Image (cartoon, rainbow, N blue to C red; front, top):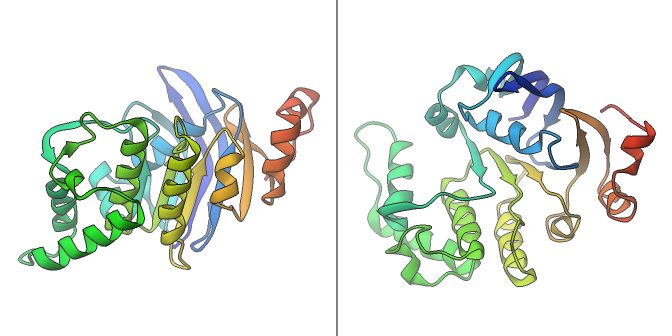
Length: 251
């Protein structure tokens, strides 16, 4: 089920942020977006997920032919969209185990109940992949967590919900190399022919561990250059000087 973005324009507080984004992420592929600060990368991720701070002026975002922009946030989530935030929010008073369980239960048909034994077996197996202690099941969501623990918790939620389209907004931000490897291990465990990924990052180092099929450069609200994973290496060496020089290759 492909995610297709066509001529997407969006504002925040009357200021244009996205200025005609075109991008297609087929199922089974990992696409990375890189670009300077303020280029619109995080805005794009939040609009796909349904953040209401942004005013979409025109364009479409479809998945499986259905326009996500016509759905509420919870509908997009149930349709298979998952956004791992750059700064995961804390949810005091709600344990991780209950939070994830409620999210899974909400996706089940009316009248069906989640099997508790199977749920915890699955949860613990995913926690093992992410090297998370069992005590995290009873702790409130992200409350008092370190930056690395919050990011692992986001990936745990993603692994349990098994979305069709996974969006990672600067998941590597603030992670040391060991935490980065663990987070990448969880993401790679989810790679599937039936699932697409959009990975937003400033740094090539994340893409050493989550190797993309395609890399895109975003600048001033548009995708201005696309290529293979070698493009990330070029950006690491030369930066974004080509943007000033006018070397733009539209995707």
